[in-house]
Image (cartoon, rainbow, N blue to C red; front, side, top):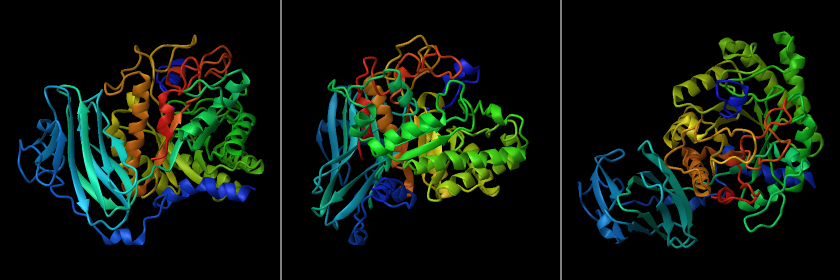
Length: 539
């Protein structure tokens, strides 16, 4: 979780049978790590390469309704080409001076049956409409991906996929918008293969303590249920759990981790991403405090501590039958960890600590995948410099994870640039290790929220509402889904279950603190599931 640079309290506000079961839970991760799809593409699918007519809308020039190769229905006057394409001179635009609904479509025939993925570059200023790309009439259920709103006005690439069983398929570029709202489409592709999102997870680290203190949860119909059951019913298929070395109040210690892991894995069948902070409290780009018990150690002693601790925690999880599928060695370690010894100002020392962490994890469970996790940046080169240095210093890892909070890190084009660039450069799966968005700016306890109308400027494309929160997670997942070559692994929503429960606050040194996050949880102030839960659904 990213912290605000101004101090510890404000800082937090800137920031989240066994063989068969293990095999089943490992499938989503293994599939993405191998850059394959969850459902195999039939060998015959690649023998056909369907052609889209006028895919870049360049054939007719500007101002042409129903461009060559395409048909339209609905408010056909709102469908036309104009200058300013994504890669060429022209684009398809949907716009009208009054409310409209228009579908620009093209049917492709003689397709060899199999999985196919539609890719489209889009941009829109429409914050209240229903605009999407879809694949229909393909012999299976219609698949849809909504057009995100990027208030920067930059192009985004989104994808959708379907199994074609009727030897034909229709591409739909659809907009239903208010007067003067516009959406652009360009550079359409239709290629063999699928594009699932393997991981739709949540960081539920605070849940166990909240439950012990009386926290309760209700599904959208008002039925009381366990929060993990509600989230799993919505499609959540992974949990992320943090652990601190020796927190003052026991919050996020190993005992809590083990209990949380048993509930998630053993009771609800959810695989685990373990988040090792290597601190007694929050670790993030502005805070990487060495545990008190290790504070006088030399670098060599710290290396031994990191190895032993990593091996112990993972080993204890394995021993109780809840093996982590992935482990983060450090949390948001843009500036290093275990300061000052592990600062990026001395990369060789940071690398030595990271290598011991990796070695400890693998000594306890060799098949566990290693994640190196940074906060997002509006400078891809900054992230590349960090990962390249880690690699050159011999740090071995499997997955790249970044935190992305729209209101702190920039609009969705920033996320897409980061994810696509890192995946292309290193050939490793990438994921959003943390994300969240507020459903309200109100407060349910005495703690000032991390995100308020006075300390944060929200993305104009997403209101602080239940619909805005759901749309933001939906669109973050769409950006992950569009990472080329199947390298978009998934995303974790940070603390969807951290509702306002007395005693379950953010500060391990202050039992009266509140959580500061209840306005970004996936449950409202009455503990009822919000629409964002439905965005965990498989896609």
